[in-house]
Length: 362
Image (cartoon, rainbow, N blue to C red):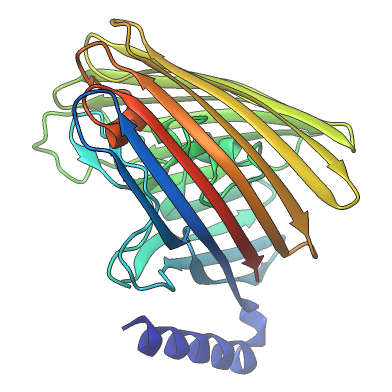
């Protein structure tokens, strides 16, 4: 299916660009192909599992553009689609708990189908930009800024360094918010503000307010700091809040980054996730080490995670990478809602992953 649809979409975009140059339409995309070996080792309950596969992590193609409306105002749009070049229905191997307790795999394409990503239309001007549609939240966007392995199979949001609020799509504070309006401010001497508001598509779901989020960042030279807050009244949970603080300091050869998250997973439980990481760059090679931990307030359930990787950039658009990642879940008799631990079973355990990949952006 994708072999028939993608050439058609590309042809339409290129034809549109030649006949309506004023619209400034361009094609963009991302291909990340990796050889992945994973090994599950549950504690008691469950079955050991190991496998080697090719994985295309959030591979995508899209079209974006703008039109000058005069007086400093522009119309802007973006349409992005995800696909799997391997046609194996494997996707990434991390399975998460939704806040309601149900498990779902929220990254990776299946059966070679096309999956919608960010798709929006908006206006940009002296007020910043306002976009309407399906849009990544500021919470997710800021997390991506401190992950050099973002949109690879070793990315922090899949390996326990960042929470599930950086992934998925929907109306319950997922990383990609549907039915949403997002505003981004202009740059005020390095300070940027962001806010989103999601319209509830089901008025009969016992939720009496619409999800929203606000955030701020400051960037100056090699320093980045940010803060985010999101809230939602969710059926079966009640008021659910999530907030985080994070940042990065780039010293050229060395950089350090991290964030701390605190969020509610049920009416009686909260979860904390933190990460700290650093890179060293020498002779074109960047080495990365990231450490993370998640824990529940109402139990002894927790996990530790770490990722060690190296990257080499052939250009600003193409890199190769390889690394090893592990998380170890300590579950005291209940899986509860520790997001990442569903993959290793109800008694906890260890999940190891080794990957080598090639990533290209266009």
